[in-house]
Length: 112
Length: 112
Image (tube, rainbow over all chains, first blue to last red; front, top):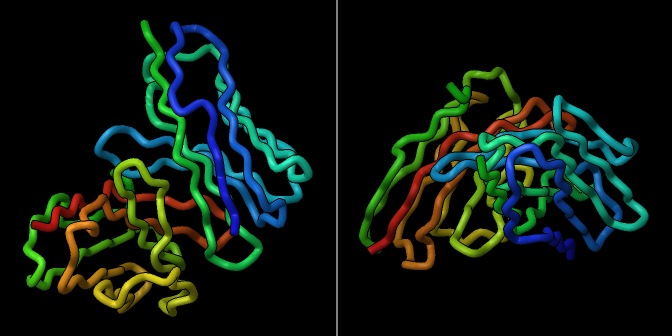
């Protein structure tokens, strides 16, 4: 059974800092890995999707890496802003269609 | 405008009531999903529909009954729910497994 762990559970940084969020998974037979953000009372917004054959994806100030062999992914946020404050979720889709496992999330607070 | 609209946003019901949650997507996607998000638990995938056919049911109790009449609409019919079913129910859609999922803002369900 796939298990996804996100560390840390919460993170508070001053504006402008670069930061890294971590995601680890137990079964490396994955189809893809996706990072989402969730604002309070809202649904999820997809940030980056990495296919199993890829090593990283970039979008603006965000960079996500994937190391299947070690069962890890990181989300790097450069020059953080208060608007980045949200809960960040990592989700792994297994090679079986439709089986997605989510982590508990990291709640990020960026202070002005 | 998220492209995925869920109604109602909030629902309070007794354990003997029957109600339905509605999800509508205007993105031309061919896959739709129901998720359950409970407090202090990871997001759980409940149902997956691809091309209007159910392809995944993650052992969800029969008191939850999904319906996908066409590629744009997804329903979750509820009956005889339990207090532990109180949660945020999120709908998502995607254009196949290789594409990111787009989420609605969810229905906050409270069972009395």
